Image (cartoon, rainbow, N blue to C red; front, side, top):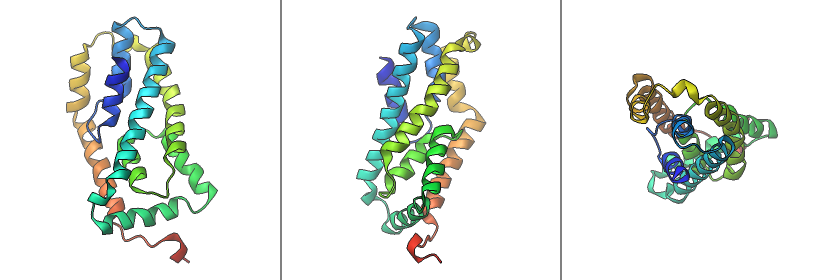
Length: 183
């Protein structure tokens, strides 16, 4: 049950509640061992994000050709050196941003390898989920419905999701030149 819920949430392209809130709820209500809950959360979230990226890669031909080409050109800048690749991995490791749009962009950009991004994402979630699950007492006063509703309806959460979607659209709308053409 935990795996299916967390996987499904991380498969959504936008507006899913943060995984840590659901894991905190489960930590308080299911009586699962913290290690098992953390490991399940990491595996389910990582698999969900990997699937999301793969789906965007598979169906990118449904997007305008100019948008896909712009995203590919942007990818040539992101992968032009090992320093850029490491910075990209760091973004997936420690990003405070919603990761859905990061994985969507990576899925559209065929030059970006998804597996290392998923591994960086999982490593970052090890820290986040460990802190959240072991500190779940802070959520004890809230019901799951309250936590879910707050994460979906808070103005800041909605604004962040809208901004991330706009950033994804903007990234592909920029007329990027391939890295090889940049002097």
